[in-house]
Structure formats: structure tokens, C-alpha cells
Amino acid sequence: MKLAFAGTPEFAAAALRAILAAGHDVGLVLTQPDRPAGRGMRLQASAVKQLALARQLPLLQPAGLRLDGRHAADAAAARAALTAAAPEVLVVAAYGLLLPPWLLALPRHGCINIHASLLPRWRGAAPIQRAIEAGDARTGITIMQMDQGLDTGDMLLVADTPIGDDDTAATLHDRLAVLGARLIVEALQQLSADALPAKPQPPAGATHAAKIDKREAALDWRHDAATLERRVRAFDPFPGATLSHGGTVLKLWRARALADRHGRPGTVLSTLPGPLVVACGRGALELLELQRPGGRRVPAAQAFAAGPPTPGQSLGPAADQAAG
Image 1: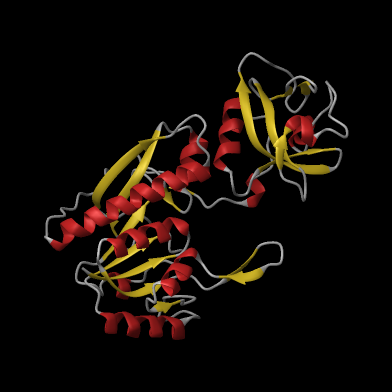
Image 2 (image 1 turned 120 degrees about the vertical axis):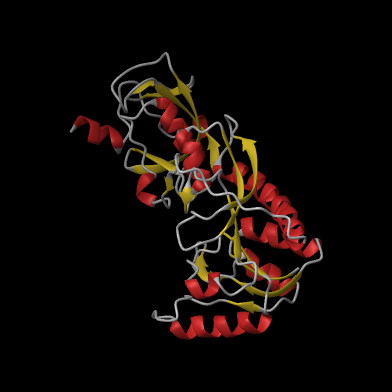
């Protein structure tokens, strides 16, 4: 098919690679403007931009798509380029910009989105993380016909996958990227044969996957251990769950929930050289892998080698909140 593609991170780049490998004609690629990243905060191209440049695909990076917004000039340029490219369909994957009505109506087959959840469960920006955090047993990919709502369009294809007890946002992301790439190729094949029926989303069961906020990183020990263990996995690799000891903020990358240990939330129940266990609102959390500022991920014994917490001591900042 003759198509255009809009996406930004590696999740989207995986789909674009599969689309190109399937022989589709990608006449235009849209991706987000370069953003500062890394310790030096230097501008970095998105994964989709890097792929588009490597494959010599026409590329645009509009800062906005609303013709009446503050980025109206960018939007007008994007509209002109898309009109000239005349795609039969626009494929969207983790693009990061809302599509205005003029763009939704431009391709003959409209715009179809690769969404990383089993809609209507987890509409919004962070479906992978929220599914892990909530303890969902399964998630998947929904190929969706886009409309003006937030992930409310009709479903075209769906495929699911289990969420393992050791899945992090990183491992689940990678698995869903592969699944999404396979499913979009299947969807385009069916669409080209006019054999891709649309099915409305069920009216019940919709949830919102709010964007991850860095302020959510700090562990609140008043929650139950199972919830905190899931949050640790959901926030790997970003933003990383955090705790504090001796005025130092550490990132917790791996933990195990213990149902049979109890104590005041945030209190150290046992410590090195044995398991490092912290009481939660219900149960306790064994801390397995931590990272000090400027360091790398290491076992808990190495992270606290210079001065481990002692039994009865409180780890912050949530322990302080609980005390108040």
C-alpha cells in the first residue's frame, strides 16, 4: 500500500521496519522534533527519525499539527506534504501528537493506530506501565481506526500476550513492539484487500493510562508489598522507583514481595548480610537490586556496602510521611 507513517520511539521504529520489509511504499514519515537527552542533554533524533534517514525516506518533524495553533506554520507544511504524498492510510505508533480532524480525514482509509493494550483497557499515554502496575494478567496490541477521541476508535485487529511475574516495562515493551510490528503488517495486508472489518470497542471496562510522572517514583511504604513490587517493575526503565537512606536517593530496580513479614511501614525488618527487608502497609518488600547516584545497578549488598541500614531504622521518604 501507499502510506505515510507517524511515530517516535523504538516501539514505532519496529513497526516501520516491518512495514518496509513487507514492501509497502512509505511516502512520508512524521516524527517528533529532536529532544535533549542523556547526561549532556544534547539534542537526539528519535528512533523513527534515525530509521527514516537510514532508509532515505521523506521526513518531517512538525512541532504541532493544529492549523490554528501556535505551530500553525509547521502544521500547514505537514498538511501540504501529506497531501502531495497522497497516502491511502496513515499508520500511527506512539507518535506523541494528537491528530486533528483534517489529518484524520486526509487518507482514503483514514488513520490506524498500533496501541499497546487490549482496548478499551488502558487508553492513554502509558498503557504498558499501567498494566503492570495494576497487576493485569494479560495485555496486548490493538490495531485501531483512529477518531477524535483518546484511543476510542473502532478495533481492527487484536492480539494478546501474558504479563509475567518478572516482566518489567522494558521487557513487555520489547515483546509488544514485536507483536505490534507483526499485527500492523497483517492489518495492512487485509486492508489492501478491503477485508479488515471494524468492531466498536465494548462500552464497559475503559480505563485511563495516565502519563508517568517522575513524582510517582518515590515508594510509599504505606502501600502493600505486592503493589510496590509491581510498581518497581512498571517503572523500569523510567523513571525508576526510588527510596532514600542517609540522605541519598537510590533507585530500586528489583524487589520481591513477602506476605509473611510485617512491621511499621518503611521500617527495616532485617538487613545485610542476609536479605534486606522493609515493612510495607501489608507484607514486606525484599530489596534485591539498587543503584546509587552515578553508579550502576548492583545487588543490594553492594549498594549498601559502605553502611547498610540497621533493623528498626526507617527508609525514606515515605517512612517520614507515614510517621506524620
